[in-house]
Length: 199
Image (cartoon, rainbow, N blue to C red; front, top):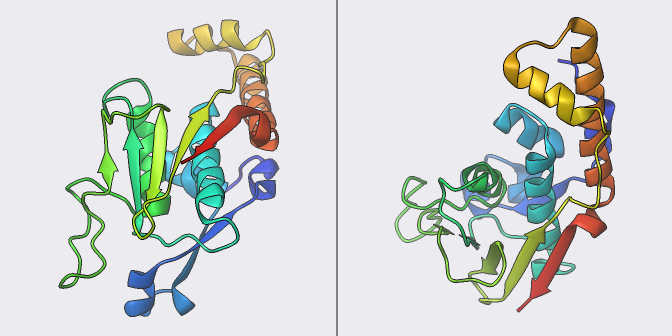
């Protein structure tokens, strides 16, 4: 499996998952995620997937400071409906990493380890996304705006041709390179595209 090498240079994240520890899945319950993991899950790498990954990573850093985030102990709120825009795509990344689901997730063992009722849409929040620690109820609002990272001027015409199914072989190569180059720049400049509001 080949992919752009910059995927491997993106900072990963580790979480403590008490369910994984209880079932002997990962040693000490420590589970790690990389950008490549979310790309595999989504099936593609784009500014939306990059932004979702950065939003989770930077949001958890702010929420847990120097401590390790606890998977399954995090609630995620979205201002928009799941069907609106790319909200569902972003929510899928948050669910993968945080373990949060709405009604379809793991119901738990007895009164422990439930992953349901931790993912909410159309929430009354000030930012597009908000995450909450269920143990302390501290929250952080997250805004992702990649507009400062401009793409090559050739991208839009090539995107139009891609939508029409009329890209030549050479144009396809150029488009792929330019597309992933913008994604790389977004990931490298995470401090410019992510804004956090700690509550």
